[in-house]
Length: 138
Length: 138
DNA sequence: TATTTTACCTATTGACACAGTAGGTAAATA
DNA sequence: TATTTACCTACTGTGTCAATAGGTAAAATA
Image (cartoon, rainbow over all chains, first blue to last red; front, top):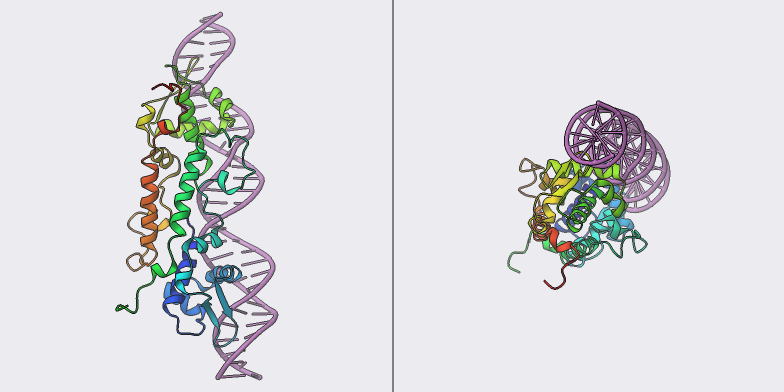
């Protein structure tokens, strides 16, 4: 299950992309448009800044802004930054030093296959794919 | 994330399929082979019986048994019985009466697409796909 | 019939994550 | 200097996960 953190993070980034006018956008505006508590969003953008996906600027005229172009963000990296590995089972997320049954486990290959499916899905979707096109004639 | 309940359930069913000898198999044996606490497995098989995937028999010589042939169980139905809907986000799992933003939500289509991917994946895998083939020459 | 073996039942627990809320400090601009 | 904004630490209630504990009921066997 993808939690609110991952989902809200993507919505914040969409909002910043769609309302980009060259300068910083206050979180207050994003919160109002997205109908999400500003206090809660603070936690989320903090992680996005720490992960290098957004930059923040304090003071009057401050706010947040994307660091890259929307087509340079994958949904996978946003989600994994917010939620940790996309792995569908603990056996895969724990790294290699997992359970002793791993070698003989009959179910592990299914989880691995599904893991790959998931990974490929989210790393082949870009933030730009989710934007309402403003310039129709392009 | 698929929890131990779903994963153990599949392992129990594989174990029952592979050690099928026409009669009931005590949970004690399954627990020992799978190295899972019998007490915990009781909870899991209870759900499997309630869901009509297994039948149990009390008393000496009792135990559990599959109700159908392994090729007639999908992994999807086992997982969803144990864990509830496979939906990747709450927005999809909550049914139709979800959030008021659903119609205009720019992220919902991605979740829906991933949901379909997941659903198709697990409902096209069968329990029989996970069995070690005993009859090689078939 | 007594004993053993098994399923089946209810309740409880500790740890942790989720989804926030509360109240403050630091920085930048007007 | 006042305002606006980001940024920081701490706390909380609710729920789920992964079990454990201690029983009762049923079926076969001796």
